[in-house]
Length: 151
Image (cartoon, rainbow, N blue to C red; front, top):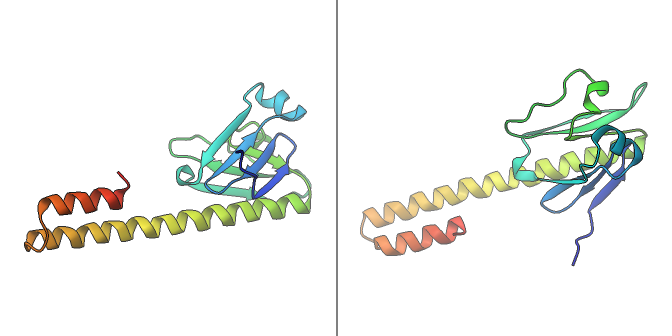
């Protein structure tokens, strides 16, 4: 069953759909086709997003840009951002507010996943200490570690 997006809006060079763990960029608009060709849809998982830049629309269009590890984002304002594959430009106050909601949702999701990762590491460290003290066996330690790491 196809998930329904939490937030969605149509920009000038594509659509954005926010899901629970990823954001989808869809170039299925006329302007999106002209700029990006037949690239179709691109899913970007929150854990892969290193930063999000938003420009408020005004004299020129606004945009939301997702940075990824090793990516080379377009620099030089809205005119260059329009051609960046991880950027959707938009007009209007409603779309700007939706872009801010998307940014907040992703940042909140990423900060909570960072907390769980550090708590998992702390738990593994405690288990290792218990194993060294002889409270649990090496086999028990490995089993619990795999469970914490989701392996």
